[in-house]
Amino acid sequence: MEFSSKLLQNAVNEVSQLPGIGKRTALRLVLHLLRQPEHQTFQLAEALTKVRAHINFCKSCHNISDKSVCEICENPNRNKELICVVEDIRDVMAIENTSSFKGLYHVLGGKISPMDGIGPQELNINSLVDKVKSGLVKELIFAMSPTMEGDTTNFYIFRQIQDYNVAISTIARGVAAGNELEYTDEITLGRSIIDRIPFETSLKS
Image (cartoon, rainbow, N blue to C red; front, side, top):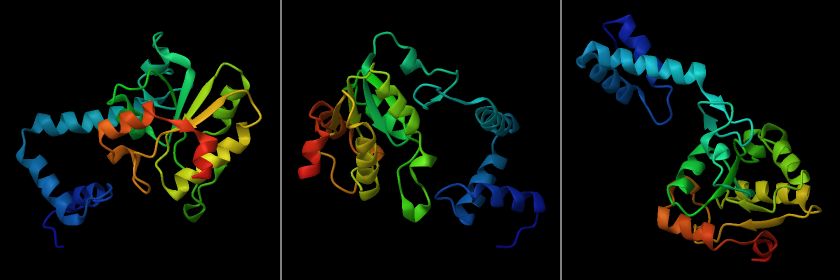
């Protein structure tokens, strides 16, 4: 792809590094921004700069937050004895949209995937185990995507905490095997949270 401007080429190259964005789509987006009023482009650039420079991760659940502790963890109406374990923040958003869960979350930051070089040490598993050891947690809900990597992650955590006095459940398999949680419709996902089953039962199925 030939460019008449180095500035345009550099902008397209940067935008094309975003997931799912090829060079042609990047060019279309950059040209769109050039056609917009100047202040709109500057507002977009400022918003991206601020989110990169000032975003925090909740020190309790590892969710993205504007403060050191997120609004969900700070909410006194949430059940602090119930923790839903998810892969990333998109899953928190998906479950919150169902309005079916009133506990807290724990964001692992990924799932165990040896093929991708991701082991337990790369995830927020130790802090989850520490929460269980504290004795304040009564139930963990495994809400990982029902894929091989998700199941592997669930089982690894289960082995770490099975000797502690905590109930362990997993979302019902109304979520089809192999599906990513964030793409599941809200009704199915909400029912899966409500109809969760003991994790040990899921091992036998």
